[in-house]
Image (tube, rainbow, N blue to C red; front, side):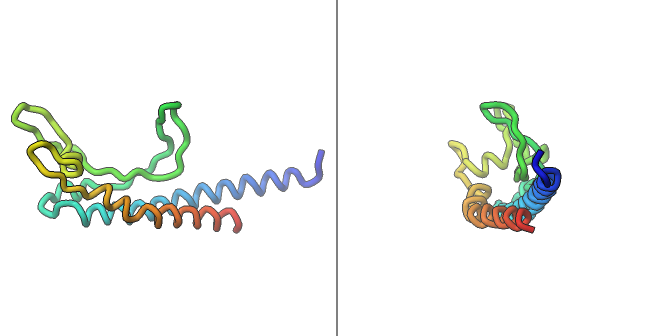
Amino acid sequence: MVKGLDEVQADLIRRLYNVRLAAKQEARTQGEGVAAAARYLAPHDDGDLIRSIRVEDVDSVTTSKGERDFIGVSIKAGDEKTVVTNSSGGRFQNARIQEFGTKARAANPFFFPAWKANRRRVRSAISRAVRKAWTS
């Protein structure tokens, strides 16, 4: 057996723990910034929509290949208070209608413009936090 292997394994486990913690904290911080930008861009006459924009912790995501671990957050808009009903009785999420529009209503995007304006900064900040956690 190689001398010092236990110390190397312990160091890697410690670094991995620190990296996961730093990535999660930075993702939360950056997610709050993107959510604030989305709240700013959302229609100001719809207070329920603005209040529904939130950041939620996510531990796993489901893809076409199944469920996998995920270190990060999810930014969501819309809740039960922002559901609207049309004349036919169909229920729709107002956040989605605002973002993409309908035949009768023009789009008023707020979510994707906020993400597109901030995504490089967010990714860079998380990468920096991970590098810093790994080397310290």
